[in-house]
Image (cartoon, rainbow, N blue to C red):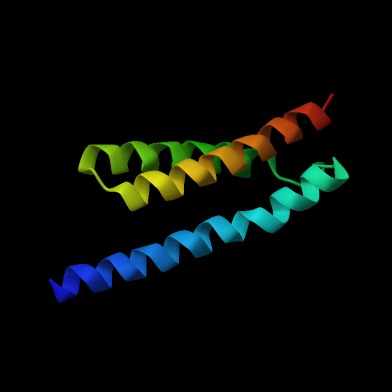
Length: 88
């Protein structure tokens, strides 16, 4: 029981940090409307990876994995959309 509690606490902290890592970049792009410096390939990979991680979380029925990666997926996908719109 103690090991599971510790694992959940570690996972929760990691989840918050993972989401927080994308927010400054997203905020800057949303605020400035400029995504030219962002790598299209990187965000294609990140969106794909977060989608697969969320699916994996669903398969193993892990709420922290699902929630974290779903939030990351939304943030990353919005950055990707802004990147694609900035290429016009």
